[in-house]
Image (cartoon, rainbow, N blue to C red; front, top):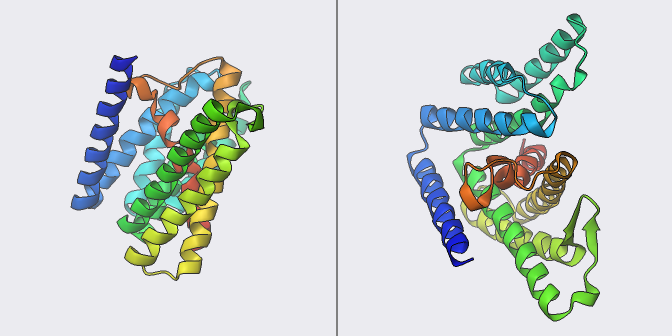
Length: 253
């Protein structure tokens, strides 16, 4: 157990360091390369969740992501979804679910990159702080109540029985406060806009977490991958951020 905890701490520290370097350098080409890698790994992890093994789908997503070099990532995403759906219909594919990995996780990766490009690195940091605080608060609250007052816990959803309503509420409240505080200081938005965007990011993040749990439960797997060691896969760590990015784009764009 100690080794497992130590591994989680080490991986978490490395992720924080890597993200800090990305924030400090804030280079378009470095950002593009990191997001392209994120897209590839996320797509790779998603295929088994949908019962697919067509690795060429990753290449298709990467080709369309390259359009983000000279095009708004949201337009690149819409183009990808339309052409992939049209292509599946054109060849009369017996597997219409080929479109699913492009809806998730590809589309949210495009949205996350759009948030960075259109709103700036400070907004990406805002999103990460908001969702990370929400996740941590929800986990801590659930653990504490499970130890002290297990009878009052109520499951949030059948998709993830271990997540409680009380934990989710604590996460949304504390995550929203942390996000609003950060944005009102470092981002050029009013406190009410900062609070509204943070609340939406936390709520969407909860749904992102539930959706990932739902997919894993259907596939009967514990984690989406092993690339992050004890933390699981990329989708296990980014599910809430992917959905949260869409919420922030709705408010800020």
